[in-house]
Length: 333
Ligand code: QUE
Image 1 (cartoon, rainbow, N blue to C red):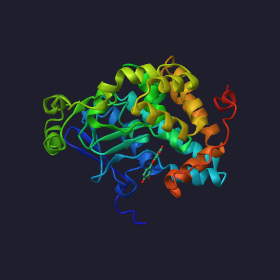
Image 2 (image 1 turned 90 degrees about the vertical axis):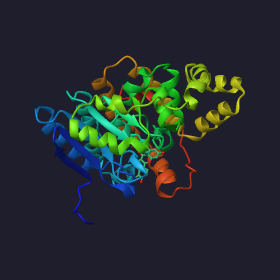
Image 3 (image 1 turned 135 degrees about the vertical axis):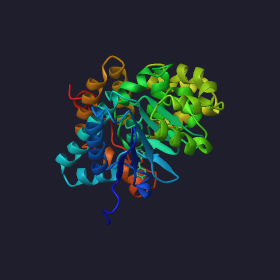
């Protein structure tokens, strides 16, 4: 493999620390080298008075960042290399924490797919700029993981949660840019056509206030219209109550959510409901610590290797799930 271009490009341009995730053929999914690049950049720029803000982008047309390199994690799990699994998640979550405590504006330009780990490197920052081509999701229940990268802290705090956060986490709902603003995951909407000018203005002026000048009111999306139903159904309580509320709803939307809920890993559904319940009452460091404990147990559950196989390796979309394990053991209680 060529090593000519790093998977995370890092350069300082005037007062801006500029980062580009650069694995476009893998939709900029985070590997360990990128994660270590983030850690180095955060460490170098945190106290550097020459850097006034950080600008983060994804290379290529399609993606900001599709998540973590979960195919590699699956290989490590199947090889019994628990040290590699631990290194990946612990260093990724340290980066999420470093962004949350970063003392200057951290501005993400999200102009494509942004899932899982992609939210982890953006949502803890001050500015999440989305375009009409942005697509945000936490799809982990489909691969028998759970909403991680600090989203167990973020999702229970979205307006309208627990329903809003649980809807996003349980169903992996794909939110377009405008919908991500409606849900509270994104902060600013800027049309793709204006991104080059926004980038140039940020690099020239080195001031985060530039974002406000480019931002527009997002066009109406589904989230505002669905919000009452989302809060009614996904705020209902445990899995049985959520299913009962969706059945009572009687709409096509509710039937689709029910079908999704029954297709994803049942262990992930149970873990996600409990994780967000706990996350609502914990600070970010405690949430990340709980998530790290869960990675150690849940990646050893057969559903994880099976889920990644079905969605990302064989792509047959037909995972064979095992029964839910002991929740308390998964949480390390
Ligand atoms: C759930 C996930 C991920 C996912 C799909 C899910 C994830 C992830 C990717 C992904 C997608 C395309 C790639 C790639 C990774 O997909 O975390 O390398 O090219 O990274 O349903 O959690």
